Length: 250
Image (cartoon, rainbow, N blue to C red):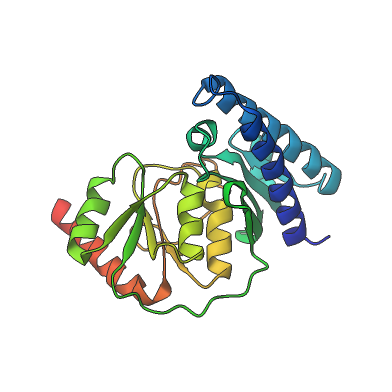
């Protein structure tokens, strides 16, 4: 099986296990820390075991495992988030994900994102879409509140804000055409975006940091606080407004 096939198989398998855990949770367990921890643990154990079985020579960077600095000298590193959106998962919602990505010699080369709550799997094996320019931009935002920059961006673009769960689900919402852009400035780590960004690129979407620089992975410090993922036909307008808003804030 090639690397994209491995990523897809692992993300789908972990997602299937997590969906069963979620379905079997009692009303008393919903929203609990125990259910969150159980989901993280089960998915991490599964992905770790499968990577050892299928790609034993590769390094791994995971949200749920101790970081091994040897990955910095490795040419192949799997970047995984066993359960992106633990809150949504624990509440019995659908908007959470499993991320599996491969970084190889400086680039994201294979990835998959499972969306078990909607029974969908997205991977870098997909064909780029034929994007059209929207009449009104829809922005994916946090369920709680948009950051000040994103709120100002929505005002400037007269965009519709669409609240939803995990970071991976928001990026996948752009890929799936539910929204036109996901702009995040509230802080993230590499595992939050590696797989979704790789799949978004395969789908023909625009991706970058807030300042327009490239999203880079397998750094010593995995903190990667901001990103833009959007329909390529609105990228220039969106980036221009973001720059103008940042200049005013200085």
